[in-house]
Image 1: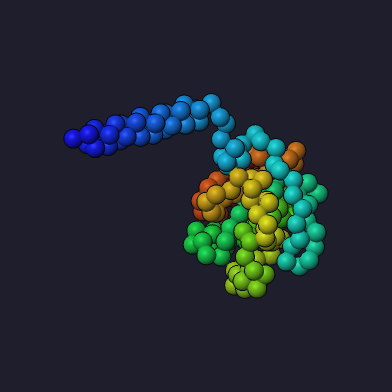
Image 2: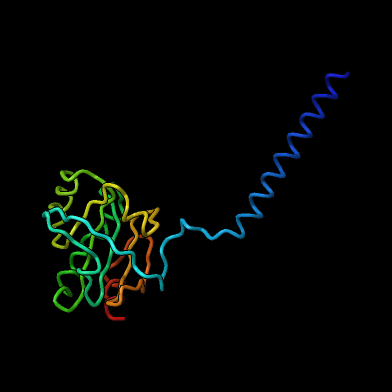
Length: 174
């Protein structure tokens, strides 16, 4: 009988401590800003420097035009694959009118990315984010995700998911 009481007491103490820890965690998390949230409209676009697959140095603040789309993607990502033709079409059509794209692959090998670029006939600059520093600067989680940056370096649009050609044209004509 004594063993059952001790066991019940230990269980009760364990449950009380567990629920207290959970309660404190929930309470404190309501006061702490989520630093892992995706960069949002109105935020300054974090600057970055990378090398394109052609070996050119690309710094966002020097590359920025009237409007620059930063697109994060991976070759394994089906929505990323589906949006590439739209990105290429819009880039080809508007690049001479102050629109640019900086494409950021999330750390795959040069070989895999080069094959992907060739398959989709992409002409915009591609950077491979091998150390994930660009991804972290923008708090990117899911793919694809795109940020539209204005000439002042401010994020003016954010979209998680596949972009359509229609959506891109609307963004360009803001």
